[in-house]
Length: 428
Image (tube, rainbow, N blue to C red; front, side, top):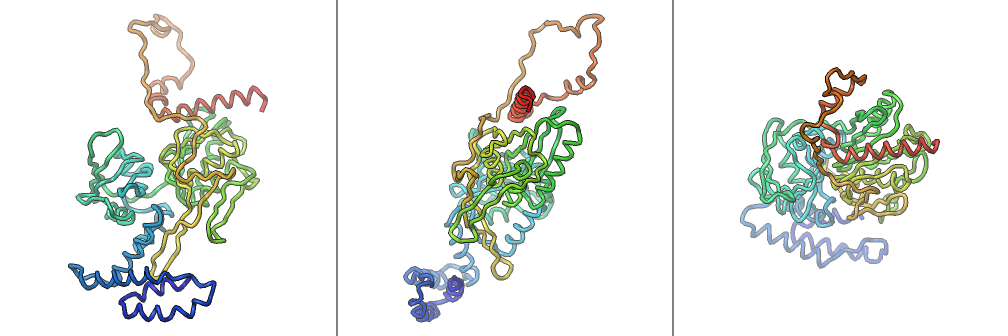
């Protein structure tokens, strides 16, 4: 398998190519040697030579060969890619949790750049960019036909500089522009808050190396606020991330059983991960929220908890990325991001292109409050009425109701309350 890079580096001219062909008969008798497509390599060398001699501007050998490698990988699937030194460094920074840019997780669709999800509390999220938006232009340049790495490189830049994106969105008649200011993207992947007394929400925006540690701290903090009767685990618009982090997050809610397994062509790509007995939240009622922006590692967590009947999955169908990418370092600080396996939920489901289907479908919606009829009188309107004894009530009245701010989260909270009532009634 080590012969191919050597061949590619040797295809600088037809003369060198001929010497390579003369060396191949020695391997022909070896049944374990990889077959070499001689005619295709001859075609490659011919095209290489034509470009070198006839292209309107001089092109270096390095540029042509790197472009050839880049095209070879991008032709496999939307997630495999060649990483030059800068892209390789950016990827390592991204998984560590701090990088510069706009805060958008993107992928390729129909030759354009598609938003998988905006990252919480970033310029993209604050500007209203949504999962599913197509980025047709970055500045004045069209994104059609450019690689994913090129698009990311164009969106990143010096902190404080601005870039204009042209977006196409379902339901919006014409393309529209959004101007964003680049910022240092330091992502806290886990946030938590108390929705009501006894009911908490944990929001995971993406899966990084330290996500599981942050999750455990959030669980302990919520427990410290009093009896915890239920948790909403919000994975909406979570584009995924590190596989091991998804396993650890699932393990926080499972005390036994398979979490995920992978299957690929190479022996080392066949892996399985199971839960451990030490589980801080094994008995707390759980609702998992997903949507079309929930991808990859998010789907691993939702699928594992759904298969084990540990949680009720609510929302809309997830993105459907069921493949595993391995980062393979190569020479000179560069790398290859290669799809090496598919992953499967504990029951053997592959979610590739299908996604996780929620147990309870709740579309993202906005509800409006029906005002009471004009002139209707309530107790507090009566002269001399007694005061109530709920000091928290007035503060809640001033806040916009949860059902109007986030309908899916509101429904998840209601489901948690119903589950808690049922468990209490059964003496569980």
